[in-house]
Length: 126
Picture 1: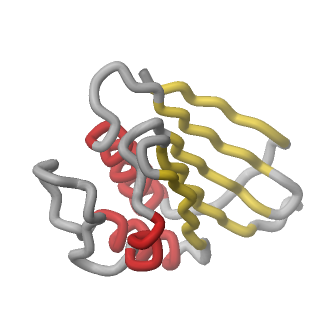
Picture 2: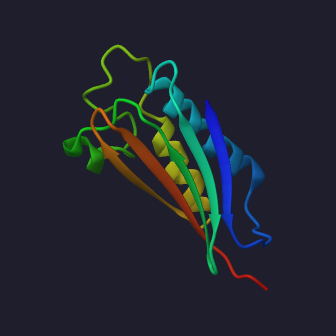
């Protein structure tokens, strides 16, 4: 199950639709891949006064704390991924795409509890 919720103000935010779409698809795909069946994935957009936050939350396998600092490096995969297929390029690409849109990426995770990836984009609300 994927649940989408928007919170906050209403505003026009100008971002590259293809870069944003590919980033969100990658993050939701990861949430599904590392969470297994019958999982709940939250996809939130939050508009504040001067930033847009996009959050993808899952209750999957989580990422070991010792792996978090390398998470966005090319070809890096967390040590608990086992036989789950992947190249280690997806999060690196997401980080690059988000950077091209003047944003940044943050990750909070706890092993066996889940992961939250947050994309942050500054904007001016005219």
